[in-house]
Amino acid sequence: MDRSNKAQSKRIVVGMSGGVDSSVTAWLLKQQGHEVVGLFMKNWEGDDDDEYCSARQDWLDAASVADLIGVDIEAVNFSAEYKDRVFAEFLREYQAGRTPNPDVLCNAEIKFRAFLDHAMTLGADLIATGHYARVRPSPTVQGEFELLKGLDSSKDQSYFLHRLTQEQLSKACFPLGDLPKTRVREIAHDLGLPNAAKKDSTGICFIGERPFREFLNQYLPTDPGPILSTDGVKVGEHHGLAFYTLGQRKGLGIGGVKQYQHADGSGPTWYVAKKDMANNTLYVVPEHDHPWLLSTALIADQASWVAGRTPDADRSYGVKTRYRQADARATLTQAAADGFGLHFEQAQWAVTPGQSAVLYDGDVCLGGGIITARQP
Image (cartoon, rainbow, N blue to C red; front, side):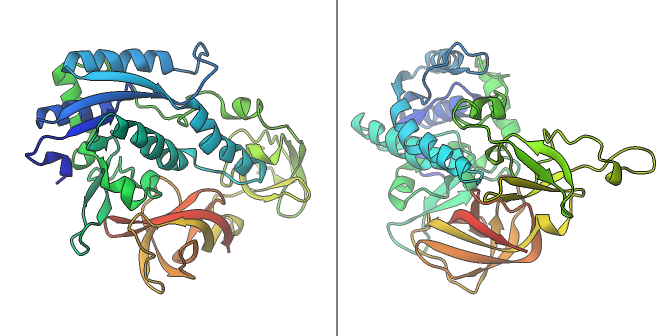
């Protein structure tokens, strides 16, 4: 059970984004008898009138919900912190040919650092968000906490929270962790919340739903080069290696290449399989399960152990190398405070440098790191 369910009333600052999840979070905490204060975070400047930016409408939705359920709300601007701590790293990673996950960094640096710091100035005992995850006191170590998967496996977001520290986790609660998303929608509908039917956001936290390549073009230079097949045949031209990720099959612009056409005139489905940064070359393969897309091991750095300690090496754990992936069994090798290696029982598809490899012991999230290399 979430710590926010204790009988003792607490002052809890809730990150209210204007979405259904955070709105129901605020209502649930108020129903439990807590003193709830809403905080709307603005993390991006410069394009409020852009067709893809919903910040203004999100603020109106959050304020409307706060008024309906009877909680105070304020807006705070973390745009400067976001650009310094998240966006700058995001661009550096893409320029290096990797594919970062800015939502992971956003949680660690903004939602559970800048937001948490601000909430503490408001006298908060805890902060809450609409994440589908759970937190509980450690059953074995006094004063420590555990991050657990949300019970709704289709919505579990513990992957995005694995970089939190024990201090951050000790101040967090996730009231939706025990609920399925269908129940959250029902609550919003029953309450008559103005955003009850609002679609979930699927865009990157500061980019929104805009075309990704178009957005990156504003910040990274295009550097065209060849797209080659595994046997060195040129099948197209890329716009710049930064704009592609391993396993990508859409937007490659590869037309009919005669030697790869089938008898009926159709061609294969191409997948990005390798980036040669030194020669500015993108390699593609004509099948989903091509060996170039499969990995049996990986190396990760920038390890962050939310569990408070480095897991034991030479043990098997559940591992996710991307969000919404079923746990894959892997043995932890080279375990250290700042990095680790993993060897998978079964080869994994499109293990991508820049993404996070996150370890689990059952439902307990232990932490993870940034993938730097993969091995066939």
